[in-house]
Image (cartoon, rainbow, N blue to C red; front, side, top):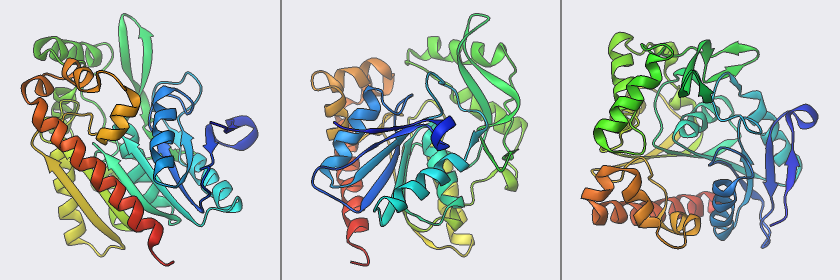
Length: 311
């Protein structure tokens, strides 16, 4: 696949543009994977190209596997570039932490008219870094948010555990449950210690177009089911411009990827990979696969409808 690469220094953002061979005036900003050109990112491009849209993959930076004070201006600049280069409609999709980023960006930039959040939160939390530090693979960064805008950190929920306890809590829970990673206690304990404030909540009522939220009750990274229900309630209580669609599966794990996308990632053994990653997938493999098949259709339908609106 041909691409155009973008760097922060020369272009104002880190990413890659992958034009659909069939031709399209619609583009999705996709934040799947740790790097805008890694295997997961390329897989998301292949899957989205099948839906007939151009794709701009984005990530924090080359070999930057954390999320801390990510400038929303980078997405703003990517949007401007996409518009100048023939894209009449712009959507955004993210999973896990970038699902939260997708919602946040869409609440700031009205040009985004399709927002898909896979296992997102409804609030912004403290920034973190990944790598190796004092025997830890991840640690919180003091005084930094996940995101920033115009040089200021966005308000955030601080984690109640500092380094190195932050990682030790995750490590202990992961070992206890047998999951690939389990950070739910970290988030639950932090919210109990610091109830989410209004300025830390994502203003989803400001999102334009369609907002599709997807999560599962058995997510062990955080309680995305609770967060999605809070977003549903928030929309009910406030004037809004978006059309909310959401689904919460009893079984689906943190990997609520469309089934066909997962198969594209792992042509052989995709179901086995999820089973190895999360104990819930080992206990309920059929239910998890049914969820992924349903997600596949829901995302396809959302993109298809979005492409047709106002045509």
